[in-house]
Length: 118
Image 1 (cartoon, one colour):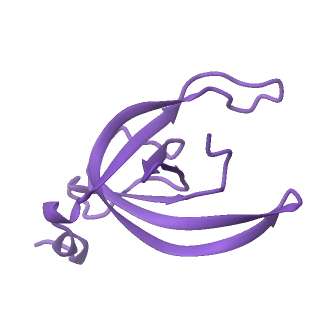
Image 2 (tube, helix red, strand yellow):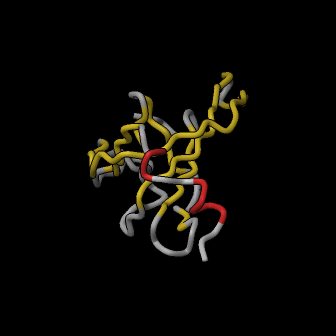
């Protein structure tokens, strides 16, 4: 028996090119990650923008867009990675979700503008 999530997704829905990246090792003087981003792989996926909002942080207004990405299941994707979609980095904001429990589809919740984005 398949779940509703599985019924809503088909391989034909994966029509966007998504680049999965992880940060290389390296820390700055404050102990913050400072390595450059390295491409792990490029995959086909589904992108669904969820909402846009503005936050006031560090004395400036930041525009943030939340996006839900769905890709074929991969066990190696981490919440510290990011997704490049249409040339814009989207930081993964939580643990990747096996949405059907069958290791078929992986959902990545991500947002622009939360971290350094570089």
